[in-house]
Image (tube, rainbow, N blue to C red; front, side, top):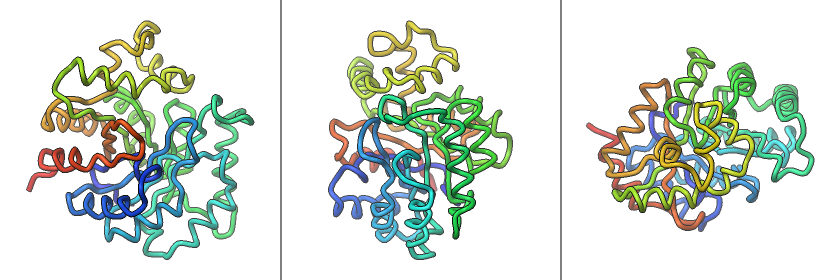
Length: 288
């Protein structure tokens, strides 16, 4: 699966207007982005609807379309595989199915996430026809999930992490598995304004045990997670500033071992397509 080095991660493709989603996808491909990630949000509708994927795939010619991520609690393995195989072969060749265990806060039957995910992936292998491991990627952050992803999928898709985590993930994965990192971006040059916007976006994630564990394991202190997040945490997780400064953060991830970085531009509403920001960033990301 060719993700290229940089893509766009956006809630708008699963929360916004369908017609604009198709038009925006076509423009992203023209701008040079190598992948379009159909984002979901904590506690929202199951993300990565493969019907939406089919529409975005039909609107583009070469770009990879990825889901970020389908909750394993919301879709049975046989149903997911059947929906995948209902797509034309040419579309399946460009579709990467992101899978995740979500969070106990949103799933009433949440239990043994590692073992449940492992069983889910085994079921995807066993169904006829299977959803191939090369067409799936795992939203993993911890060591057990990362090792499982390396063994049973094409790689991992960490969310809300810094370049230090990227280096750690690459050391866990070794050579071969894809490391596709989400990088949240605020194209604002004022530190005060950018950090305020970042804290608004980060607020629901600070309550989630999975993310808190990831950040604490990565060297942040409990104090960094209090009061909306310390400046240290905010500046590590969010890239803000001019396009060249944001591009430099992406370079840090690549140098740390990322194969691909998916940019999420923070917007005021999940259905908003950050099209002007995507256009403004492109010249600093794609040089001829």
